[in-house]
Length: 399
Image (cartoon, rainbow, N blue to C red; front, side, top):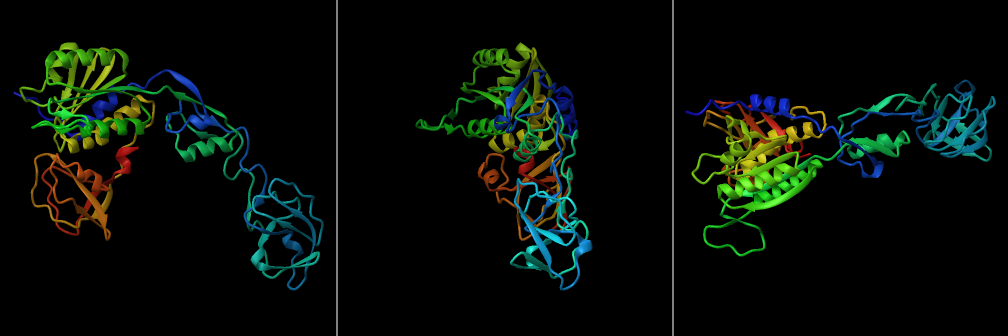
């Protein structure tokens, strides 16, 4: 008799509790940091911006000098990267965006409100103190922690690090993930198909997802439906990887050998989650190596990766993990088939409503390519058109 199925939340909780971040660190150049996970905070030694500066092209002045119809003497021209002289009473400075505001000036009048003549400028609208000035340190204060350990380095975060003058960053080493795919029916693209065979789409999908996360991927390809071959591949993979990931062979069929192979070499921690698609998710241990077994159906493998494998691997990489966003969106469909498992439906947003792909079969990979996200339906839920449903954008599952 099988153990009760885990709920999605229980499975995620158990996976994250088991995910031990890699301890090894390394230093990488700023230009090589994209996608890596910080292992140490970034503290800025400088203020950004370092000086008060003009937020736009215009004229720096003392607001106390302004009077309707009275021009101010143009004393200097200040470009970005230059530091001008202090303003004297009755003076204004031509200034450009990003240029330091000269001492004495307390506002910048934008050039659209000014009329310049030879050596003079008439400011036609009364300026306000502080207007169009970006203050020193308003972005980053000297000594401020701008990035914390556990953050994944995006383009924006690399820009923040660069703005502090950082040239190198301390990161966790890359997570090593070995992946293989079981099934006598699987053939790599490029070979002719014999009767009963299919091309291995999961290999393309899962290796791309792993690379997108920043893992160091060892692709072991297809493994036949044979217990000894599966054991040998698992043994070799676990000897050199932090995590072994498989697709197929974890269900209850007579030719599903992966679970048996894991149990010979290690142990299964849990198996099967009350969700659709993707019930036969398996987590286990092969000595010091984690094992994750995904279903063989393409949509099931994709959904399980996004909801379970992705957060697990991110935690193993040392990254902070949060639940995926679920946005309330009006349903542009009816769902009158309440299920006994939590369901994830492929959907996209059209005219402000979530619409479903016509075929929700777990073997229809084109539904994933079409979809912009997943509708998350609780057990027993029905939906009438116009009801709000939780929509998980694909971006929450992929990067």
